[in-house]
Length: 137
Image (cartoon, rainbow, N blue to C red; front, side):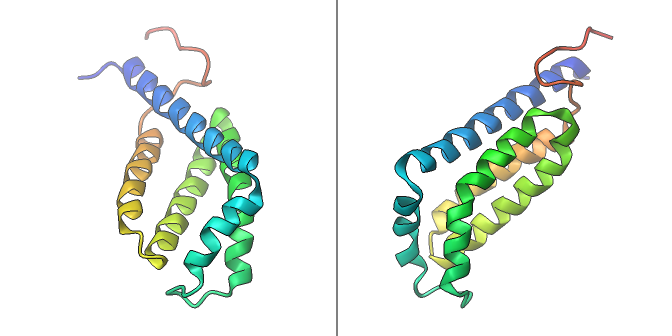
């Protein structure tokens, strides 16, 4: 049987990776500018499969970097860990639907890895805080 502290350490490593990934992705989109990010994806959604109005797609594209940074911040604190993971799963599902709509099926397959990482964080036991390790039991 695996030691509980090792499982907690594994959860910590995956959570720190996800925090860094979401932070870098959100900050990158801020650095290149919202307009560049939106202008890159907007033409791809012009004939969208879900018949969504373009204003709703643009609204999501403009808020996506902020959502990533909010999720990264929520994963830092153990108190908000679970609710943030539910929000993270929701964001991944929205991204999957969006990539389906623009026929980027390879991107959908790649998102399953990130979904699995979030699931591991959710099911593994965790230390009371992200930064300090519990003493062995």
